[in-house]
Amino acid sequence: MTQTKNVTASAVSPDVATGVAQFLAPVVVDLTALAIDAKQAHWHVRGANFQAIHELLDTVVAHARDAADLAAERIIALGLPLDARTATVAERTTTPTFPEGFISTDAAVAHIIAAIDATLVQVRTAVAELDDIDLTSQDLVIGIQHQLEQDRWFLFAHIAK
Image 1 (cartoon, rainbow, N blue to C red):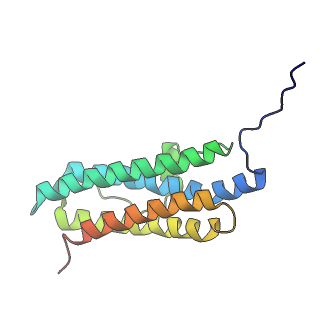
Image 2: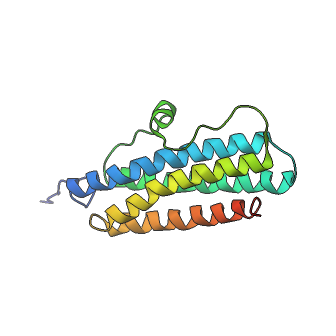
């Protein structure tokens, strides 16, 4: 007779999964807001260096979406649900509200940098807190931090004096 084991959704303890979700969920929320706002900027940016900024904003969008997906999938892989519905993102994001309408290249870049900075606060908190909870999740967030910092650098180079 073959015996089967009761397999849970995750190989980590429920306490570890809850701890990871506590720090990754805000990262997912802010990355989702960043992706939305960077796409809004991409559509509405006008002015000097338009094409370079327009294309760079699409890169920021892609990176933010990919990073949000990685962090969200980590939470789900650990067996917990995640709420990243649009209403939740709008309510919980720490990123600044993007203005309506057309926006100059310098203003768009400055705004997206501010959104990246807000997201980096959540990311750095997750890096620090996950050190004692789950190193795999921490490693994932360190990669997200690296990409956000690089995107910030590329954007800042366009407005630096």
